Length: 231
Length: 231
DNA sequence: ATTACTAGTAGACGAGTAA
DNA sequence: TTTACTCGTCTACTAGTAA
Image (cartoon, rainbow over all chains, first blue to last red):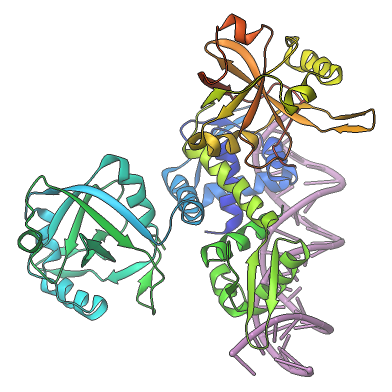
């Protein structure tokens, strides 16, 4: 997104435009953005065009509201700041082992995914994945992780079903190397899929309901096989 | 600050330029900023000129580092995002009553300050202020408060001494209306000055070392007597 | 490789103004 | 009052290139 859009959206958010329609004239927005009424009016039109804003235009005063897409863009910048001021390269997530092979497990163990894991992460995952339900208080950190560059695992079609692109991140669970896998653009999904060279339940002697700590490694990736969370 | 500077600084911060010199070529920065090498080079020169960046230019690769001023600018934006996504209009600070009249108390009880309190906050503070040492874990919230608009209490000169501009915010301590007073641009100062119409120690039966909870009201101010934390 | 100059251009901005 | 058009200016960018 163009930075000027983020700037305008941020100021509109500060005026209360995130959850409600807020009456902001182009003159007022111009003051907030330190520009003329004319330019602010144009900016609003651009934001509407980009679907970052919706408008309820009355006879006297327009009322504007930031769309979900717009809020997502702001969160992306917010997450950048969190990376700068809050996080290091290692983010720890707490969670509980969830029952074995859910829907996600079926997806991830597809050969097309597994081959890519080997090519990019340099290990062949043990058949089957470990599901970890992330603790509520760590969900926002998971959001930050999702906004970071990770290993792209491309999607594919098979038997008329669509398997979407997923992003993998190197991680450690109890000092064992593994990777976490999250579907691209999914919001507030609290289930992690872990892939590992070994059979994690057996190797770590863990089972359903056990608390685990997953340390995700967010250090910069080597080559061009990475992607930013949302392009 | 021009938004384009904040944008560039943010990307440099993400490349690790906050606490250390980091080797970033103008080409690399251009990629991060989605602009040409030439423009990125120019942007670096502008940031150097604005004292947001310092540079250690070697023969091959320049190494850059964000200055304290630059970090402050980034924190300002970060605090805006925190206001958007974390805070409501009321921010609660925890702290302990500290010993009576420190240096700050001497300052604040000056007549020139007191008259302005009456004009702007519409109450005349009881002679003397209450010092509250803010708990370490709430210091970052205090930083956010400082970045918000508050009531400007102008500084003055007296007997060759300079009394700086301070910012006041409406607050409540144990449901009693009061105001907190912070000097303009002071970093990581953990001492709050509270002013109130009543004698707080007597009215609330509190004394040194007692834990108190101060709820600061950050709702938008009425007129033109407010200022943003740092202009 | 770098960094950064100059020159030319596209687009962002504000003034004037209409509705 | 609003919003938003046209149009002229000027800035911010890129390409070419030097060091």
